Length: 153
Image: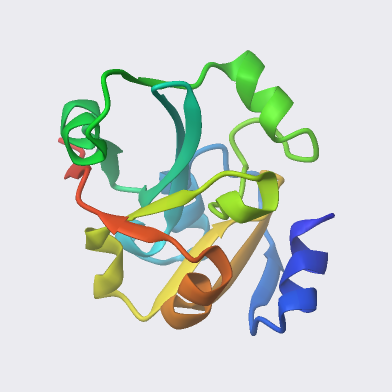
């Protein structure tokens, strides 16, 4: 199922846009002329063997130590590219939408994202993105809230 089909099926209000290729979430922010804090990037981690999607602003990074503490698990590590290709067969590598439910995994949302009304994220390709209200994103992703993001320096 494509992201757009999933959004339509759930009755989510969103805007789909095509843009010049953007390989990173920060590039997407620049291309869409929005602050990096409004662009959600997904980071896939494996926590004690279970894959989780961490959703955080483009201008943040995952603090793996803090995430491990909050999840109360033994080991947390980033998923490698090979595993990402397996988990997201319908997406270009690095353009995964931050909606773990579509791919059978929970989504953890960093608390820093709640500061903005609107969010933008990649829609499975490096040239397609989706913008929607934060309320619609939360209804779509049904994320658990956590505090694991740290600003990039």
